[in-house]
Image (cartoon, rainbow, N blue to C red; front, side, top):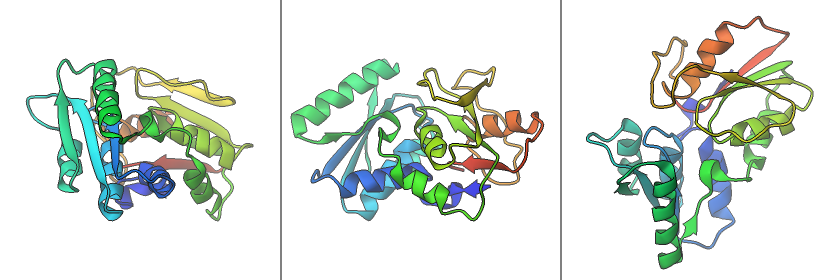
Length: 215
């Protein structure tokens, strides 16, 4: 079990720290769903590194706790109507271009080395690895870390790039529908809670590891 819910911002904070350390930019712009944990991760790391995070999210009557938490770290929140993701991204890209800010790729992009290194530092070699898949960033990093392990990815978003050698599972629920977590630790009800539930219904095949991104 990997408890990245104990890390401020969760797993994506590992990626965003690496990204900010390699960039001279002072403002980092991200577009994502209102329930996404990446907004919290970017905001937390920007706060720690004295940078500005600007987050574009779909407008809602009531902000999600993730957007509220991101704002508590000093992130600039820009709510977009209509809130479909392609429009949110378009608005964010225009903002970044106008201000000379860095547009952060969805999910953090290809900077997965920090996650791979964290995985390889664990004192175990799992036979089976489970994770939720939104952008696929985490799954790709875990496949590099443990190429011989069986990788099970539970798709929780609308899009998920092909991941060589991974077994893909469907939740049967739309992304926006939260499920009641039944894990013995905090899980994101739109992400890891769904992956945990599906894993519980599958027979283990050796040493099993579940990667919890955010609580």
